[in-house]
Amino acid sequence: MANDTWSSVLHEGIATFMKRPIVKPQRDAIKNNNVKAALLGIPFDGTTITRTGSTMGPRKFRDVSSSTIPYHFDYDTDIVETYNVHDCGDVQVKIGSPFETVERGKKDVLELLHGGAMPMVVGGDHLVTVSATRAFEEFNPKGNYGFIIFDSHLDTATDIDGDKWNHCCPVPRTMELSCFNPNNAVIIGPHGAMNPRAEYEYVKENNISLYTMRDIYSKGIQQVMEEAIKIASDGTDGVYVSIDMDSLDASETPGTCAPTPGGITSREMILAIDQLGELDIIGFDVVEIAPPYDHADTTAITASRFAVDMLGSRARYL
Image (cartoon, rainbow, N blue to C red; front, side, top):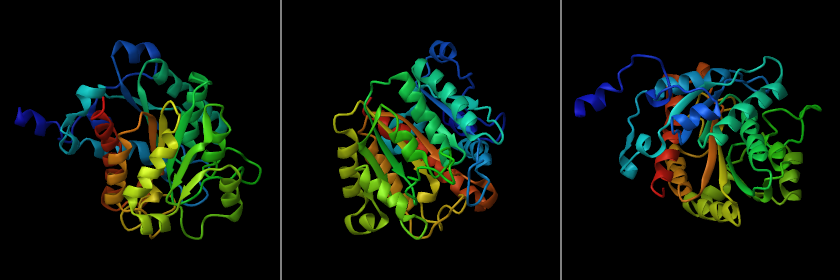
């Protein structure tokens, strides 16, 4: 058995998430294979205003995830046994058309939901989050979902030079949906001189809860997460989680579109994910992985760890 376990991490075969089987993002295929969690890549960075390159994120993410085995030591649980994870491949993005790409992503995520699988979206720039949240609105418009986003930036721009479909706008596009309530939305990690005043005003005007890096410095990640979880889960049917890899300190994750010094440490994020497991997680994404700038695949490996941890942390309660 041990030999079988270790042979599974050899670099051979097609790169899929954790070397799991491929299944088309179609509801019948998802149901027939009894898939409970499915990976979907959205390799689109057409709205990035800093460094491009996250279009290559899903492919690298899959490659490095090959070094992960189904058993999660920290949680004494087998991810595959719990979720029967499958890889649904990538959304067919439309070059030069952010909105059409979002709509194509929404269609695929919606198929996962109808098939009974929790969506795990990998980007791509942060606009791809909107594909998932828009899918939830169509899937259950009368739902009431919480929203937690980790980011060095507020990402609350209502538009960028008149364009609403930009990676600076995932929060407003999500808060406009009928099934997401700003009172249950939490932004964790913004800091530094890349957060415009207008975006901060949006946060205050819409009663969105904000925990900056200075809050994490003073309170510690455990208390911040306790408060965030309480807010996001208060009266909701579940919580969607979005992790932008630029929320991590630039020294630990150089392969992002906007690396920022002074961010969350990987250890703090692992602890945060440990606490997130107590939530009814309806789906999550990991975005802004930019391999061209990633020394030794550090950022991609870290992103893969976070996705696997999200599954393991939640599996304890299922």
